[in-house]
Length: 237
Image 1: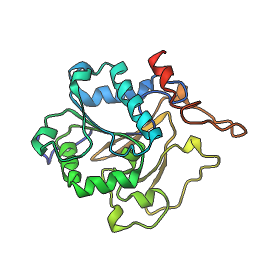
Image 2: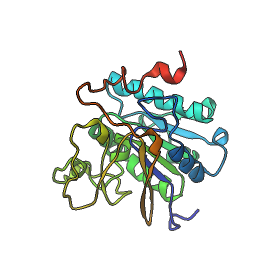
Image 3: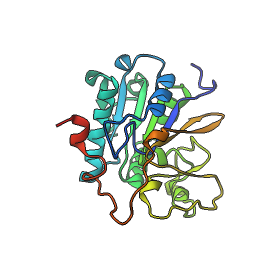
Image 4: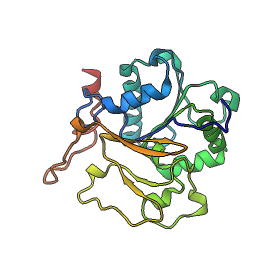
C-alpha cells in the first residue's frame, strides 16, 4: 500500500482488551474493532509486542497479562515477537509484521527510547502502510502530539510524541477520584478502562464496551494486582 493512501488502523486502548477488574470479561467492542483492522484471522497475524515502557514490577506483570490476552483472543504464541527496542530488528523486519503493540508503564521512558533508537520513524512508516498500531496506556499516550500536553503541562521539544492523533489522551480516568476535563490547545480525551480510541488519518472515534463500565468505590480504592489486573483470574488458576 502506498504511504500516501489513507491509513485507518490505530487503536489506542486504556487497559488492553479485557476488563482489568474482571479479566475473564472481554471488551468485545474493542476486539471487534481490532478484527476489522487486522482483516485476517488472529491466528494468522504476526504481532510485534513491545513492553519497553514496563520499567517496574507492576507494569511488567500487566505486560505479561496483555500478552496472555492476545493468546486468549486467538493469536498464536509462535507469531508473537517480544521486542524491547534494542536495535536488533531492522526496519524491513519490523515491516513484516501485521500488528505493533506498545504496552503501558513509564511513558517518558518509552518515548525517550523511541526517539533514541529512531523507532518513531519506523512506527510512522508502519502506520502509514496501514498496518495495525495498538497502544495501551503509555503506548497510547505517545501517539499524541506531545506527552506533556496529556498531563496538562506545556509541550516540550524533548517530549514530542508521534502525532498520530490530534488530541491529548488521559488514561485510567475511572481510577482517579475526580477526573476533570482540561482546557487544552487540543481536545482532551479522558479514557477509562472499558474504552479505546480508534484513529485514522481522517480523525478518531471513541470505542467502548459499556457492559464493562466500572465505577470505583473510593471509600475502598482498588489495588493493582489485588483488585485490578489480577493475573490468576485470566489464567484460571
